[in-house]
Length: 305
Image 1 (cartoon, rainbow, N blue to C red):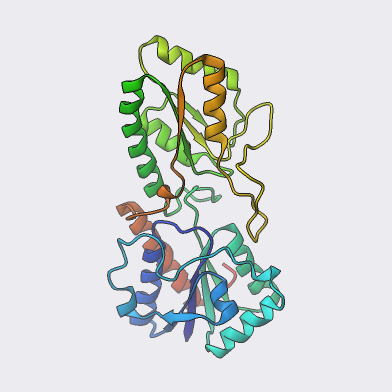
Image 2 (tube, rainbow, N blue to C red; image 1 turned 135 degrees about the vertical axis):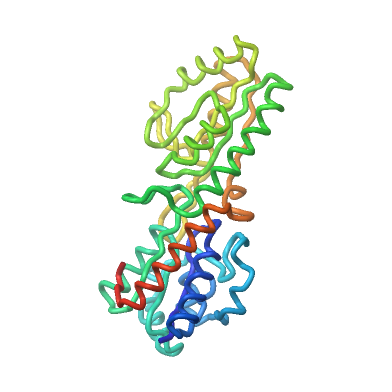
């Protein structure tokens, strides 16, 4: 059997561990061959592959990002996209495809499997930890550790200048990164997408912190929204799946806090720093487990799972 592997959407600590586990078990125990498709769904669309065997995955366990590359390509919006994918899979003699990605990447995989007869297995990937019926997703632990370290460092500079520091972390619809890193880092205010926030209440907490002679740290998820208003965005640009680019709420909140309290406020946007670098030990372990289950699903013919 020949199995294709791709990684789509945003990169995530632990992706390489999934690829490694899939290939090592697939080759050593089942005798499968593998084709790595480059840059998400762009690879199957264009027939772009890289060699994927045991030498190719050697040493990638602690490596961040993905050796296959990624993109937010949406083949459902490309003319004859599905037909091109099926033709290229046939040319590469690929019998099954393992797609590693988030909601959009796996949404495409689900349609390929359910409507077009392509044998697909999905591996869910989200640093936001927003996967139902699952305690943890790989990449989340690393992102929380990075955010917590940043908050630890910001405490000292905030108190040196006695200013408010607003830390914007990732989290479009889920506040797990903000909640975990904020608690671990001793933040004074934590704002998450699940609960709209009152700016006046935030200002009250900030003022109270200054009264005790300490500088406040406010952690806000990028998808958090004020009680009276909509999601704050830098611009209205969208990706190929129709998602607007988030970020902007931290800067907006800092300006509001400074205007209402008279205290100097600055913003730190962690952004893609949370996605990069070496995955934590927990994420390497968890991602390896995901990869092992994925290749076992291929072995069992459990496609569409």
